[in-house]
Amino acid sequence: MEDVNEFRDDVIPIKPNPVLEKCIVFKVYKRRWFILFVLCLLNCSNSILWLTFAPVADHSAQFMGVTLDQINWLSMIYMVVAIPLSFGTTWMLDTLGLRITLVLGSWLNMLGAVLRFVGIMRNLPSAANFPVVMGGQTLCALAQPLVIFTPTKLAALWFPEHQRATANMIASMSNPLGILIASIFSPMIVGTTNNIPLLLFIYAVPAAIICLLATVGIRDSAPPTPPSASAESSNSEPFLEGIKLLLRNKAYMILLLCFGSGIAVFTCFSTLLEQIMCVRGYTNDFAGLCGGLFIVFGIVGAGFLGLYVDKSKKFTEVTKVNMSLSALACIAFSVVSQMRNQGIAVAVACSLFGFFGFSIYPVAMELSVECSYPVGEATSAGLIFISGQIQSVIYILLLQGLTKPMAYSAFSTCSVGGDAALSWRVPMLVMAGLFSVFTCCFVIFFHTKYRRLDAEAQAGGKKPTLATCDSTSNSDQK
Image 1 (cartoon, rainbow, N blue to C red):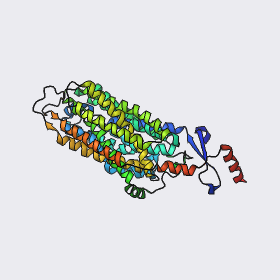
Image 2: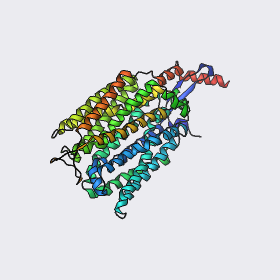
Image 3: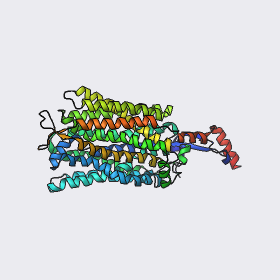
């Protein structure tokens, strides 16, 4: 049997139920940090594979001989696949456990990355390049919900109450870190159209290493002893019953719709940034820099918010304030991105958009659990992600449909020959307007109790000392 003391670095004794007449000791294990590390790497790799082509959409279209709309589908396939698959993923996480979900996700991620590289090789017929790459991208897309739903579940099962928001923040922000890497390094690696195969090879290597770490290193779905009272009842509600409870929860449904809209806006921003900016004369490198600033400031903001919320527990207040400031930053970007020679203003708008917008994702995921407890964490967080994916597909199709060909654009840096430059002025204003409307609805109508914290407070009662636990244990043995 495993020696618990070897991994234990904290002991939290509480007396959850006086009727039991014994003291349950909650423990945390050092290996939780390794599992968190592997999840961060996997989340980061999957988001790199998602956004591989978006920062170099024009070069990718030229290399594979397809249109920009087809290149956009290499990103949109993530959203299309995630919508039906996410329901199965939430069931898998809450029923089969964390380990099976993460290992399966790592294998799909690795196989998809390898298939993308094989599909771009010159010994294949040119007509097969794009379909094979799309097949690999689809495998990566199948891995996304298996990975992106897990931070909330991991935090609930392995981390104590005072570390949950921070752990969720670290795991969740590894996803935008991957977007940052893709935004910066894809343009740097590609340079010219002929370097697309090199790009796909470089991104496939980490996926294989992460698959090995997950398969060999993650041994358990949950620790032998839970870290908190809520972790004991993490799966207390059956999956279908949990869905019914969520659909009857007014506060949760408001969060589902409004924050899902925010996820859709951030997805549109990441997917379409290069196409929006090249029309106004900004280079791919500058668009990559702006995408990088968006992510870096988002990670910095998430770090501050995670630590603050872990101590203050002000989930609702933080989410409302940051969504409001995000809407203002989105409006600013929608205006300045349509102006020429405004590089500083565009960079500042992207930085503020990331700082206030991206940073609230882990807080909102924790808020979804607080307002829906005792429904499983993967179910409550997963449905919000599904909402975001559905709205992302609608938003991208809507914004693309609202673009209009420009009669002439001498300053455009878009390099896809034969295609007229597109005006994004109307789509950008529509995107900012939608985000503002949903933000106002959230600020006005969202109110909730923190059900998980209340349950833990009731279960914990007055925490006894370790000596009291020992004496209680001895008396029970007698």
